[in-house]
Image (tube, one colour):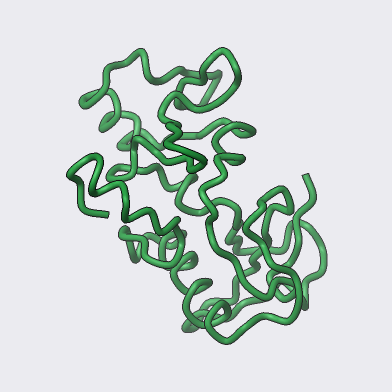
Length: 169
């Protein structure tokens, strides 16, 4: 896993490839775990030594990953865990992956450090666009800090799911 500081990223957009849901285990907070258990049953989760996770299928993918045509989508869209909302970005209070000057991000009075997982196919490298720097990253930071729950810029635009599921995205 290689983490890239945000200043090397021109833009990011979820392309609903499902790569994140196939390659990584989803760590759950206790309230997230409880919500999933209440709605889907305890068999959709698993516990580790000191963490709770979403169950994975035999192929390693998240049990809530679905595919329609060539687009993957999350069955937990309306109760998506914070770890999933933040991927591929890590919003940290201290630099963890080096490149301190390139990773620093100021939000209000907070000095944060933002890195992206280079395994994400939705990353576009280059000089950050104003839209990415001001709006997309702000949304990731607000989710990370618990100041926002709803996603607009930090999720795939999969409005077609409303047609198939009846849910509003």
